[in-house]
Length: 214
Length: 293
Image (tube, rainbow over all chains, first blue to last red; front, side, top):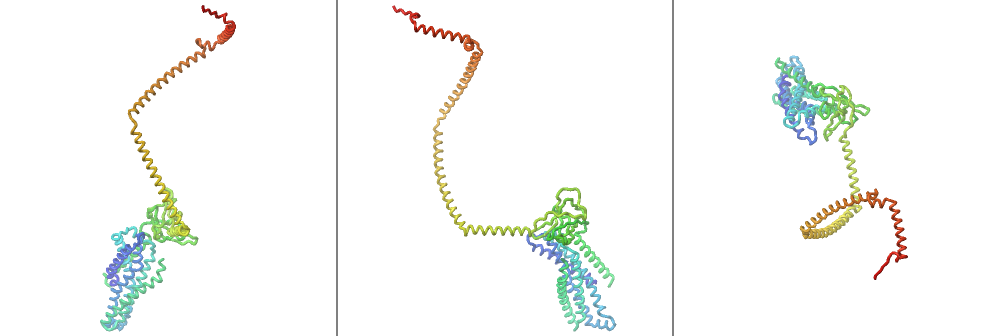
């Protein structure tokens, strides 16, 4: 939990801050004349909470935490530590994978909450201080059509992404072969596969849950 | 896990949950300030969404918090109004459009000044709906159709019906008329110029000393006439006095006019004079004895 959650805060926060700022800038300067400025707040909130917050946090963690998981377990596999656990009658899945899975399932949503908050705060700051959007207009847009389910939608995605990262990366580590080279190959493959699965899950969640947002 | 890791994870969980719950409530409740509910009912198709502004006389006082679909053709809308904003009785609610892009809000409009305020939970009566963008587009569309019809008719009349040729002929006639009028005006202008020059010459030939002398004579004549008028007035007054005396029988003339005896004597005298004259004619020698030698 420390590794997945606490240590990932700076990276996830940095990514969220930049995404919020860029979203606000792009939205502000793409607005047609006559469109209310509150639209900036509304679009930033929708982009951050519904899509970019959970997705980018998961992708970043897939690279940072998933690769580490695969490398750790893969190294244990090639150095026969897992075989030793099995010899000592320990269940390696319960001992190595389940804690990581639980940590990812818990920490991804928490990091997503922080990323959403940082992204929106960054968008607000950029809009108000650099893009000429009044604070009232931004907060009006921020609250426009908001329903609490949007936050749950974001957390559901983050939880599923966390589970996917932990499972894919642990599995790839678990099946690592051929020494150090195999560890590197497994790590790269784990990051790629988990990223693709995250994107596929994102599409599926949008397909099945997005109608509930209306 | 080491104790330090446990503390850090605990802090992360606490902060994340606090931000998640607090942020959700802040967004969903439109801030942490206390509010009170008011209700309104609008026809279907009003275009409202949760979170849209509620304006009191143009000032943001709350937000739309809930929209219930009513099968009777209505939308039952709940508004969260800021506690410090009170809505006077007699206020009406309308759905108004904030921009050309369909951004809506509920406008609360007080119709009359009132010190009584609407109680929390009451329903604000709906006012007369303002035209929506669709209404305006429909009107513009019908207007454009009308303009198109008129344009077609004008085209038919002017192009196919020979209206443009008629107008050209009319314009040519008007140009000729204008030219003729211009010639007439030029002639009249020349005549007027000559007349004015003649008048100037006449005025120049008038001797001002003769005019002065004539004016002095006229002034003297006028003064004489004034004196004459005064004399005539005096004469008339005297005549009036004489006539009055005659009427009153004063003086010899008055008595002559007013005394019947004198009249009778005069008639008798005349009668005797007539007989005397008759006798004179008959017997002239009786009265005239002319001796020359």
